[in-house]
Length: 366
Ligand SMILES: *Cc1c(COP(=O)(O)O)cnc(C)c1O
Image (tube, rainbow, N blue to C red; front, top):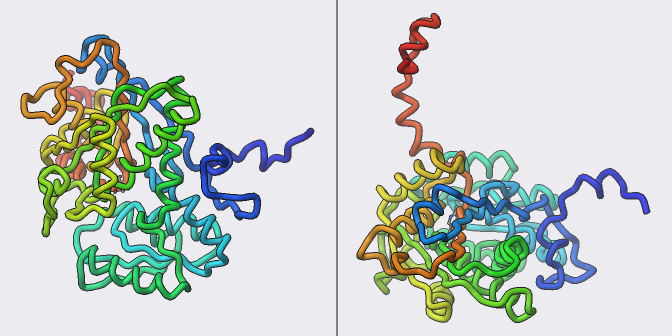
């Protein structure tokens, strides 16, 4: 049978790839931008850092269509919204959820409404929501106020809420765990990732368990989650009223999936830990310069966490005595270009020199 050009060229997206594991039927209209199937990159420098013959892989979610893992959940949430004949989706977000929601709504031809809390907004993410044509409403209030309004409007059935309180989002996000097992041939021994609202750690845990139940893997990894030091409610086991961190995607004081995250960590014999903003920025820079992977600050929390596990006596999980040849996967959740403000300082120090070979040689340091 001959394929049409569109069939040949289009990447399948997570629903077509993992249909039997997702809450869709033949009558669900699929809204996809070819998300998922992201690279799992072997990282020699990170592996060397861990030692003991361990292999470290980075699951690079920044290569999704809108630059973060949120697209995995959004394809399912927006497809289900279309099945219910919704005319609009709505979310509270200053970041990647709104960028992703806006793109999938555009793809589906429906309205996307974004309720923006006041506060620091990563330039790239805000710009994406505008570019995809979302209806943006800024409020004089924080994220919790925005989500409260979203919940009330969503109750009216005119709008479908696509924040992670929508279970279709979590269902879609678990496909990242499937992909890792499909590539490695089994689950890794350890999985490290940043934790904000804790939807993603919940989703990975669900994905690994489901694959094990289907005999596609023999084990589930120890899940090790990292919060930012100024936004570590799960670590401290209390709500943080005013969460503060440069890593805006994990600036969350009262995670929506708190209980599920604790269950995932306990059942997998994993851990929850925190990393400082300084450690996050150092890890972001290190990963870009040593492995060629540029991620946003929140994403670097998993790498900063890996370093902490290797180096610090205070780490919640110490790697000094992990079994030799362990396989470790770190998820990096979003692309570095989304949040350029942290890097631009170095750029400002760039001063032009005279346009001669000698001046350029001198500037290079030759
Ligand atoms: C949403 C997000 C997170 C946090 O994920 P949760 O599911 O809320 O724990 C981390 N990093 C990035 C880039 C994100 O967009």
